[in-house]
Length: 261
Length: 246
Image (cartoon, rainbow over all chains, first blue to last red; front, top):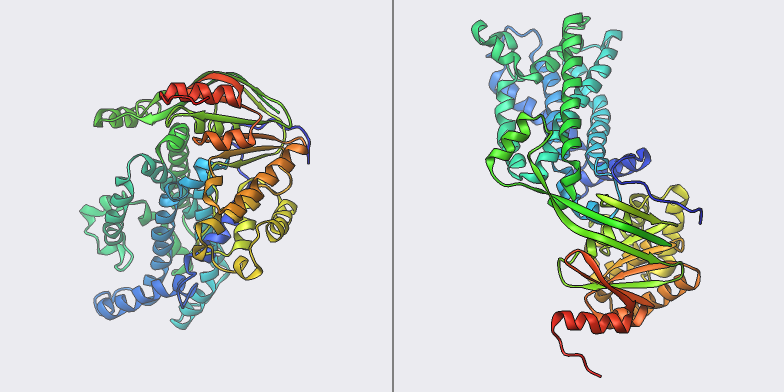
């Protein structure tokens, strides 16, 4: 216990057990005072699905199995919207801890990412049951959905880490993100099939990274097909670029965090 | 034991104006958004094991930042800082406490945030049960229903688990009731007897004189006076322009 120790500069080494402990706390706190608790992770997309079915079920008759199509998009969207918002707030919300204890700041955004992943994993079983109720049947190829979700998680984390860091300096980032999320929801083909976008505007839709992740996820889960190499490479590159963006922004602004929370 | 040599610490503060944001984005984050502000300048300080050292000074003189450097929260810009032993920072009591969790759950969480492993976590929970002076019912109640004093008790108990060898205190003892303060002073004395080093930052000269062996006064980022608590007290009052009695 009394081994001499010269303490290392903060913000370097991440203690993974601590990240997981904080993540688990986040999962428990997220729904602590609500009656339905964790069920909301699952219920939220289901309410959206019910609305979609009510409004759109006749509109998109060209989609073979509209409930399965819509739900697969909603699973990714819910993870994106909630996790990005939580990671974005992670640094500012833990400012009091970061000002008083030698905890690497990265612990808190990471813990929110893992909390999002834990929620997602728990919700996959009820989602699978619901999909099955709409006639979806599991196949071996669906296991590819897991690495796709992991790549998506990396993408969400990189982008959100950049936003989380900038949000320490400009609180506008958080407000702006809240305003942008609904726009992104409508731009991304979640409720409607992607081929509904006019051909001359397809390239605009392709600028939205979510378009590619949701497309890949649906190829695997809805069509039961093997993804083509091109979209796998593209999605991997998007995840790498997003992570790089997050690390560069965080790395270049890390030293100033303490004075600006 | 604490050894500080030629310490200089800067805060990187936001430079205002849209131009700096543009520069930042165009340089891919390389420059432009932040500028350095010197907070601590040329500080040399030795604190021996078993000593309690007080730091006084005006608001913004750099006291808390010095404590943050010692705690490993702020990196020095230049100079060296050596802190030997397990550090328990108490820069704010009750920091890291999660309102929705109960006292014991918070003890576990805070122990982990302070860098403890699984064993340290168990010891923290034990220590909180025995030292905090909170009943079992209190400890199983969400911390959001605690009074300020109860929070302070919990926070102090968590921070002083495992006889920390270096205790950093930033004017936190004032919040508890008299009984709690007495208990804190006793615990601080006990830690000193066991060879612990204590750095105590406060505006209140009386508190510093009560528990510290030696003291220093900070002004504009420099440690301008080090000596007995009496000498430093006289100096500090002179700085503030308060007439000294006796």
